[in-house]
Image (cartoon, rainbow, N blue to C red; front, side, top):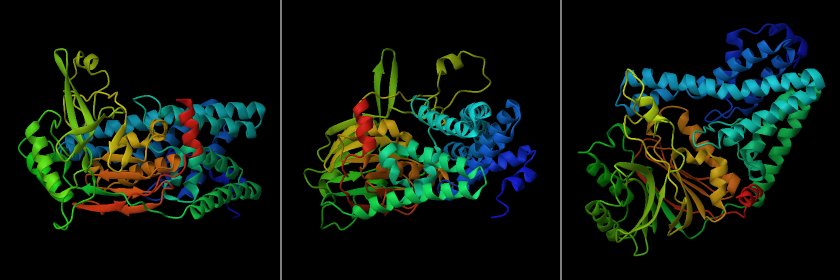
Length: 502
């Protein structure tokens, strides 16, 4: 405890080096999944704010906050080159040429709001007191997190409050104010700790205890329950590099259906089967032979009122060109498509190139391709994400749409559960798998709806409306699970508030 004093900090970090600041930012990443060391995140933020307060001019504030953000951004997103490498079929040129600039670009982009928040907090603190400065710093930090989740090109990956995405009790206040309230409380604790006094440390401990007590009470008062409705989640474990091979995709579809319809042949499977993103790599709405082949296999094992809920692709003419969609569909056992949703929030540079027409007019030395090595862009969808399934109305969320709190909550009031399909095979072996699943878990707590997350290679997991894990399938394994769908919780304060705005 004696080392955690203002005097020791002043001596050790009187003139922090660039490496010091970068490592301090990197420590923030340890707060998130899969590590879950949220007190380390508090210390990282506290160190940043303490150093900002010591600055005598705006220039060191900008430099320190930039380096802190860079350290956090690079360590949190180091896996992007690996995604480029795997999706390009093992191309190191794609990993270095595409992945490294992507990591650096996103790290710099993510550092800009931190610089603004730190500079504003420093300026206010110098003139009106550091209590006011800390409040402005924390407020602007959360505001920028909110803004990053608004635009179609937004990237709300790892908001500060997501450090509680692995802590069941600590995450429960997301039901009141979303992940943004969790961020505000984390930053409040950091401001308290940054004074390196017993009173400040005690204040942070009190805040954390109150969060835990609220969460423990909420979890204790809501017993684990299961409804009679069973859903089957399917993890086919198809490797991304071969998924779109024209000669292999039919075999992959048959393999996926074999996993989906496996089990005791003397019994029928559940009424609702959910398969991952683009599990059906065909234009299922126009290829009758594919649809009929799927329907014949479904009818042999499923009840007459059953349906397959799956990711697919879709296209439609647009004048002399064609528009392509990453889609989510519900097909009954007769082959009729009952519901269809087209992904609204596409991954920039992963599913489309922003400003492609303008960029292609430039004399670029390379051909513009998305992360899936395609010269074809997907189009932002406009359909309602509500899908009618035998298990009830689901909010359809494709891949990283599940990390957008506002967009999920806008549709959730009318739904029975959240259905998040994804293909995270690009990230196998990295922390991204766990980060992505933890962010989806927070959506369950915010809305009070169970989250059924179905991934191609993992993490396939089901959470109830309080974020309690019901079922998890092993990563990189072709398998399925029949899960009793947890009940929806009463509409949370967060869900009611968001619904009242739209």
